[in-house]
Length: 128
Image 1: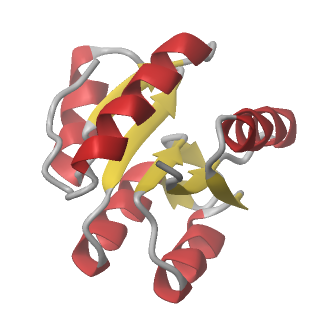
Image 2: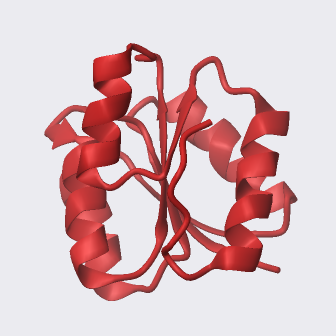
């Protein structure tokens, strides 16, 4: 199943690698580098999933997922270097369904997307 995925990542090289990889997996990808640009995408297009860094130049990925889930049923994947319990709890409270850490484990990301594809109903709720 092809997913509509929004990648939110401010680091250009990481954003390019993610969009290229997810496109290689067969998904349709949009990419943003700030909260503001991500929310513009969310207001204009439906997404099945958002893969977002938490630390962004104009806010947090938590801001993105919180607003996106007000507008759409989708799955949130936090992708960050922060793996402390309180970071994961903050992400879950904001609406992220998964919390993956950098450096990116591409096999793990593919597994997460495999869980999203059949559910595709916004009800997935666990952290890897």
